[in-house]
Image 1 (spheres, protein in one colour):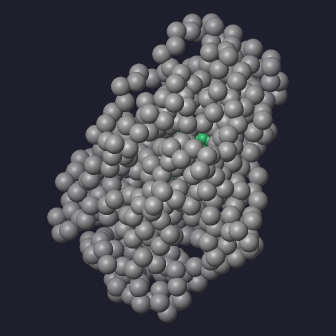
Image 2 (tube, rainbow, N blue to C red; image 1 turned 45 degrees about the vertical axis):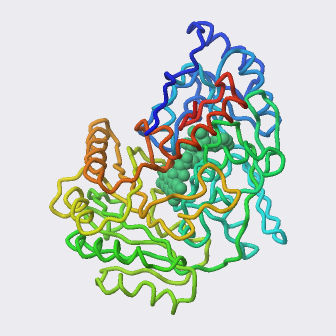
Image 3 (cartoon, rainbow, N blue to C red; image 1 turned 120 degrees about the horizontal axis):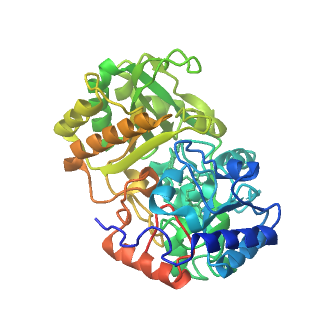
Length: 474
Ligand SMILES: Cc1cc2nc3c(=O)[nH]c(=O)nc-3n(C[C@H](O)[C@H](O)[C@H](O)COP(=O)(O)OP(=O)(O)OC[C@H]3O[C@@H](n4cnc5c(N)ncnc54)[C@H](O)[C@@H]3O)c2cc1C
């Protein structure tokens, strides 16, 4: 395991007074774009999707275009401050865990939402602040699909440049591999267009090295795939059936065709009026995902799971535009704590260990424990892939607790740590940055050689460590 030796913050020696004076100068230079603490814009723009996190940067900026991003970066650097791009704040927890924001200008990308579909070339040009909801429907108008994740309100750049694990993954691979061009503002405040020819090493680092370590991405061009409908849905059981369901799924997942990608979650919901009756107050097991193929093919693929007799089964042909509904991610900003690991094949003992932690007889503070099915194209690095072009292993584990108050956060963290400890024998040495929220696991997503390579690129493009990323590479 690699850990960062870098203390939080830039290590520059500015007094609090000079940091605030710099922020005031920045606001004076960019009125209406840069906001300081105390105003309603500051409060709104520093509130992340993950409401469990409080962000207190010295200022927050919301520029309207790439040129404005570049101008702000140049000014920030000139004033001795640092800068952190953020689109939605889904990953605000690792940002505040790894970065002291007291000398950081948070740059919200929410106005960079252009989406242009080039149907003949099967390419989408997507602004650095777009979320998947902006792209999925636009691509679908041309019968095309993009390798988005389970939730429509996640940012395209944050998701993709950390790998990007989708329900199309076992067939088409990680989303990072579908990136063709990245436009970014460097730490020197220059606008650059990076592709495999112009700067192969930076292009490699950006695709998996988590974009913000190398620049503020203002647009990406991504490959689209010809697909208008998908066979998708979920099967649901009471938690009392967790043992046969998990056992069956874990065995099935090993040999299932690449056309199917699924997830299994063991979930615990409090009784809440806003939840549908099949979730409210219930403890359940859910398998969901997508099958690429006809409904007949899908029925054959899913038959072993159906044989365990789910109480609910919504798998059906559907337009690709509604695939983001099947995973039932929270539709609104939500306070949560989470952590992850990558597991190799579980076997009998691994299944038993997991059930002991989260099964029907466990007292568990997690809202859900999720296993995403890996393998297929997710496990294969294509030629010319980036720093994360594949995830080796059988399952990506994500342990998450809704945390509306500190005691719930502490209990959720403890439960997540307990599961990770129990699953250590099945955990491989790699990790998936997007499923690591908070714990210091810097560098564990990469081989030793790749991490050294990432550090060399970072040293080249941001020697003064002006950029503050949620998973920093130093
Ligand atoms: C409900 C939910 C569902 C999820 N589902 C999936 C899934 O199916 N598959 C998957 O792979 N992941 C999934 N994730 C994880 C998600 O992909 C990561 O948390 C990702 O980092 C979120 O990106 P964001 O821009 O929305 O978040 P933010 O917190 O805004 O950004 C995260 C980080 O990305 C970088 N970043 C963002 N925008 C830019 C930019 N324009 N330029 C440079 N750097 C930038 C910054 O370092 C930033 O700190 C999910 C997360 C949640 C909360």
